[in-house]
Image (cartoon, rainbow, N blue to C red; front, top):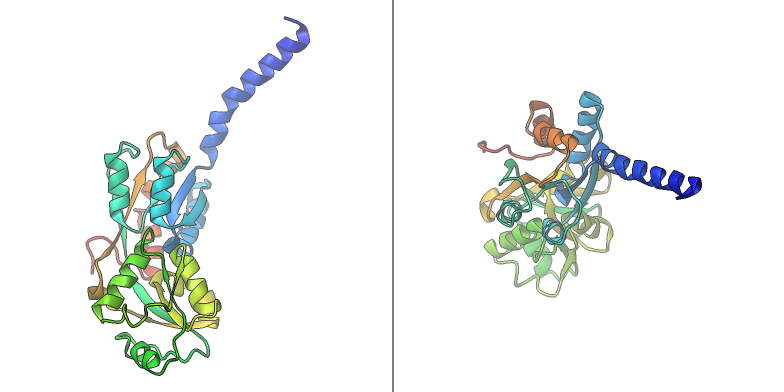
Length: 259
């Protein structure tokens, strides 16, 4: 082997040895879209307290479930529906069934200037529908977004799902549904309570919290993937600590075991 070939071989071996270590520095974390604001704050607190970083990707829980099953390189998954997390454990993708970290809530929202009058019983929505003032109403896609599924349940509970037929616009996830509801030509929508507690939200829209009894609980569970690195494991533990739990409460989440 020539000296040049030997030099490139040694460089290749060195790079190959370094790659796993570099990959361990910043783990990829998949998180339900309702966590976009709250978990970003948790990650900032984690970095401040530990000096370590994580890379957050937000989307619909059902989509992440499919991607992880197909080998997507996420090391931790925070789902908005605990069943997706449990099913990943059953499929052998996760270390175990993980931990319940939060209980989510729904809110009805409307952009400033909307004809929709907001209230916690959706009387205003019913009245606006009767007056023909609702042409577009946004929710997340119920087929793969837990908040969309629960929004549909809530509307069915008050018998407004059928009256809204043909007027529902669906976001790929609850964060996109919020965009549609407040800036996409819709008169309103039903989204995650946690997202509307973002201080930036108040400038463009209004909201009302909906009763938790109108839908199945949004039990949110997280699971570590097999092979998760030390930083991912530390972040998983950090989400269960008081500093992170205070942030979740600030954004309207109930904590496991609490009402």
